[in-house]
Length: 389
Image (cartoon, rainbow, N blue to C red; front, side):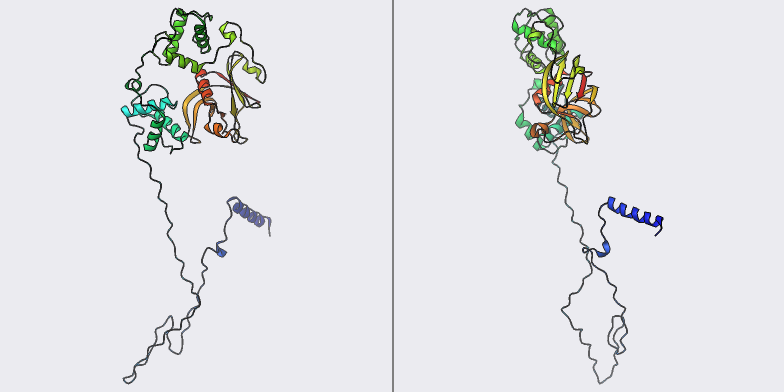
C-alpha cells in the first residue's frame, strides 16, 4: 500500500474517532436485514406461480376444480419493516404573565417597591416595566428556584408578596417625609463623634471629629441625604442613621480621636497600603477593604477554577451593578463590582450554600450577604482592586 493510501486510511480512522462512535449499519442489530428473493421460475405443469395466472381447459362435462390452497407452515415470516412516527413531547406550557416588560401603571410601582424591600431593585420607583425591573425579577426568580423569565407570573407574584409588605402610596410615588430628629444642630457628645467619624468614612465630612453638631456637620448630613434620596434636612432621623450605619463600620479609637490609623499587618500586599483598595488574597481566600492602610472589612471569598481562573494583578473597579444577571451563564450576580472584563466581586448564593465545594467562572465570590451589601455601598467606581497570591 502506498504512503498516500495509508495516509488517507489513517485520516478516515481519525475522523471517525473524533466524531464519536460510528455504527456499522450493515450489521446493526437494530435494522432489519434485507434479502433479495430469487425470481420465480415458470411451472411447466400449469400450476399458479407468482408471475403467471393458472390456466385451465374448459369442458362442457367437467367443472373446473379450483386449486387447493397452499399449505401453511409454522415457520416465522419476516414482515416488512414498519416506520413508527417519532413521538413528540409537548413543550411545557408557559405560565401567563401578570406583568411583563413594556407594561406600566400602579401595579408596576408596587412590584418595584416590593423588589426594593429585599434589595433586588434600586433607585426611584417608576410606573414603567423596563430593563432594570426585568433584571430584578430574573434575579428574584433565580434565587427562589422559579422559572427565570423576567416576567411576573402568579407563582412569582405570590412568592414576592409573601416576603414583602404592601407599599404605601407615598412609598410607590417616592414621597419621603423626614422622621423625628435623633441628632441635630447644637447637639454634643459621643453620638455626634460617632456620626462625624462615620461621615468621614464615606468622604462627606472632612473636619476634625470634635463631637459638636455644627454647620460643617449639618452640611455633611445634607450632602449624604441628598445623595441617597433621603429628605434633605441636615438632621439625622432613623432613615438617615440606618443608611449611614449600613454603609460604614464602627469607628476606631483613632478615627474618634483624629489619630493616624494603624497600618494593616499580616497577609496584606504592600500595594494595598495606599488609597481605597479591594485587596484580594488567593492564598488566604480573603477580601479586605483597605482605606489608607487600615483594614475596615474582611470576608471569605472563593475564585475561579483552573479552567476559568481569576486574573491576578492591579485593576480598577470600573462598573457597579447592584442587581446584575449574567447573560453568559444565566445566573444572578447581585452586588457585582467589575474589575477585569466580565470578572467581578459579587455575592454568590452557591458559595453561601456549598462553601468551597465549587468554584466560580473567574469572579470573586462572597458568601456574606450583609457584608457584600455593606461593601457595595462603600466602594466607588475608580477604586483600586489588587488580586494576588
